[in-house]
Image (tube, rainbow, N blue to C red):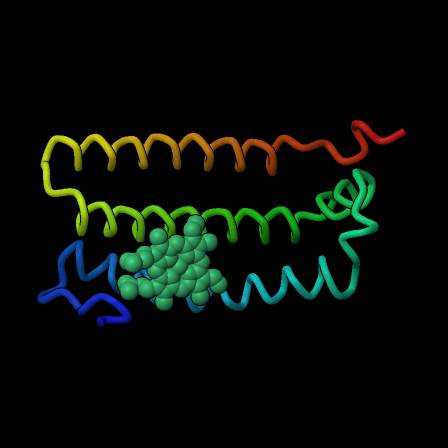
Length: 127
Ligand code: HEM
């Protein structure tokens, strides 16, 4: 059994994706550990409220932090899932259809996530 994908020959798009999967994985380990520490050790999920989220997103640091996690996780997930579709779906039409569905859905979720992070007004709903 092969644990990870073999490095593609040359320096083309496939090689870039292969490299990006590894770099994004390492970066995400740091980001996710920071997220875990702040959200689950410094604070507790039992006490997460709208006010807490509001205070957290009042600082540009956490907005940018969440945005970076979102972009890395989505791009890493899309490239990885694209590779799985390449591996298992043999019919070219179905493969293209599934990959475009993946791109459109992930673009929609990424845009929705960016919108929330950018447009969120701290304290807007708090009572
Ligand atoms: C700290 C977080 C993460 C780490 C360390 C990590 C690590 C990895 C590594 C090392 C690979 C193998 C790359 C390769 O063989 O080319 C991989 C593949 C993959 N990852 Fe992640 N990943 C993380 C988060 C995520 C997230 C959040 C998603 C989904 C949104 C995701 C989806 C995938 C997919 C679909 C693959 C392809 C699996 C395959 O080719 O069989 N990963 N990941």
